[in-house]
Length: 142
Length: 142
Image (cartoon, rainbow over all chains, first blue to last red; front, side):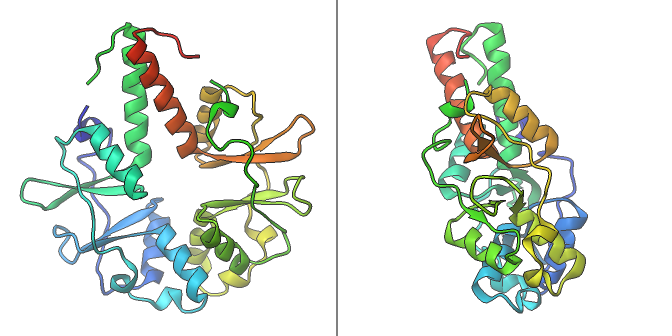
């Protein structure tokens, strides 16, 4: 299986936020789109970072007040692992579980943002494939 | 497979918080224990509710200021689905994905809190079992 076999891995608009916006804007977008992380990008194509609800909560624990006024670029994770649509699904899951992150942007061959997958999406797809393979009584599926 | 087959489903101390504490205490505990949700309980045995990092971020989006001073009991989810150690793993995963929650307390036969599992824990265990079954070339595993 490849990343593109995950439902929703392509064809959906990726929510992005400018690095100069604030955490107040982040929490509004997370709620509006019912998502757990947002790709940080100035032009919607080049990835500057990623910011998650966990980042927000961890900062709240550290500083308590003022978190909502912090700029996105000061709290985001700037070093972002990405994948491509034809990457192997298991390898991608391995990268996410090893790095302990739940979201990974998908980029095209020109390294431009084209999607975002969550660990939950990946795992659900992999589970369905494994169960289908078991039903067929084969050891195939990849 | 049963819930008790999930690594970490038993034998770990469950972090709890009193319903009269505040969201400031919640975010501190979430950070201290590197967890995503906390069981709300006055005595550490009876479950009053559950509160997650998502609950905190959603409230921040709604009210922005003052979230850290909100009492746990005013933001927690009071109706909590629970499971037992001998519950079927797939059925438990189904309840969690259908209800869209990531954490579920485990209770003993006396309905007292004895553990907490995350969807990630469950899915990892199920994936390992399915892959082992495929390796054996059988359709068994449950």
